[in-house]
Amino acid sequence: MDITTETISSLRKQLIAGDIEAVDIVEALDERIKATEPSVHGYLRFDKERAIDQAKSADLSKPLGGIPIAIKDNINETDEFCTCGSKYLESYRAPYNATVIERLKDAGAYCYGRTNMDEFAMGSSTEHSAFQKTNNPWDKDRIPGGSSGGSASVVGARSAIAALGSDTGGSIRQPAALCGCVGMKPSYGMVSRYGLVAFASSLDQIGPFSRSVEDSALVLQAIAGYDPHENTSCREPVPNFSEHLGKSVKDLKIGVPKEYFGEGIDPEVRALVQKSIDWFSKEGAQVEETSLPHTKYAIAVYYIIATAEASSNLARFDGVRYGHRTSEATDPISTYLKSREEALGTEVKRRIILGTYVLSSGYYDAYYNRAQKVRALMKHDFDEAFKDFDLIVSPTSPTTAFKAGERLDNPLQMYLADVFTIAANAAGICALSLPCGFTQENLPVGLQLMGPRYGEPTLFQASHAYEQAHDWWKTIPSIA
Image (cartoon, rainbow, N blue to C red; front, side):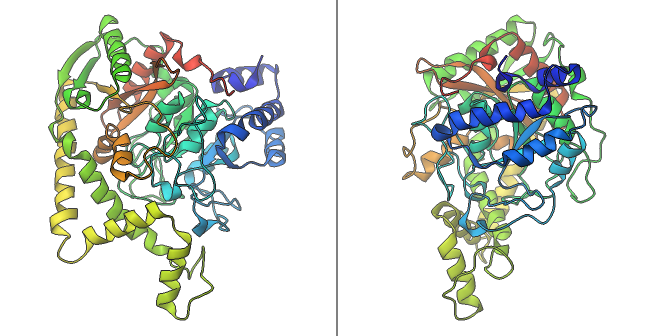
């Protein structure tokens, strides 16, 4: 048995039965990391000895007892480096645990490895990290997606059992689709953002990468729920997600938005997604076309709101309180300007400049305020659609993983990689990407299912039913 190809649920059964020990998982992952990291570069750091110490003391009576979880490097863990993929925070160590870290530990899991990311979560390819470029485990010449590309790549390469990422406009679902794993963006408020280094606060959400839908449900169960530290977290009781696994899709109503099947979709992606939609219909789901008419404004709305909030959130990185501080400053203003100039990357600077512009005097109403109004219309589109449908289905990404460097000189083309994922963040709904097949070049394709806000139980129900009827999720990349 290869431990690294097992799911959380399978490993938990073996741990409880005494067939394996928690330390065995760390040892197996260490061997896999040694084999795959020279090609994948998904981890920024991993501490085997610390993981072994935590594995030895694992409480197997807890729901995730003995399971190691990799963490995206923008989620704070006490005394761990939290660089956000930026030279600005290269020497920063977190003074506290994010709520999701506390909850993973309360559930018996422990953290093993910090994963690479686009700087401050701004990117769709993980080529904007200040430290290294991460490669796709299915083809090392291609990108893994972003901004959580490190988390997606190590789960895809089987060098992590599961991982946490953050999703502001698709940063969990898009890399999950490109790396052939399951990526879950919970409803806004389902998971506390306390301890996540903010990009765009009204859009950010933490969620899991996993091998299977069942594993996704298990991890989300552990990290979800109200947090008094975070004033946007939901006060509603968290459902038992696992109770909804194993149910059929018969009589579910599934909408297919025509706006998600226009020009720009790779023909092989379109064909595989359509085949998946046909499967739902054959299994008894009521599948019908629907419309989300304001989808065409999603990219424009996102890159106004997200950059505006990024400009505000990143103002705290001033070269005074923590992080990089220039040695060439002569006064407070030059400290602020020179520190940011030296340590922030091109994409982050681009977004700060754009965000500052749309918030500036004379432009606020023309850009930011208008974008918020259109965002409300986008949310209304989903609210109306979910009156008739339980779920909405679409491709996760319009293409498979593209070649490294292919879009670096064309920011707009890069931004279009998230064209099908952005709207879910704007509306605050839940969405999940899972594998639905492979192209002739053996590149994975992702199917996106979207549910209403706090509609995770139905989302897991349908995703699990589809997954169990297919073997896509069991396929292992040759690099692993």
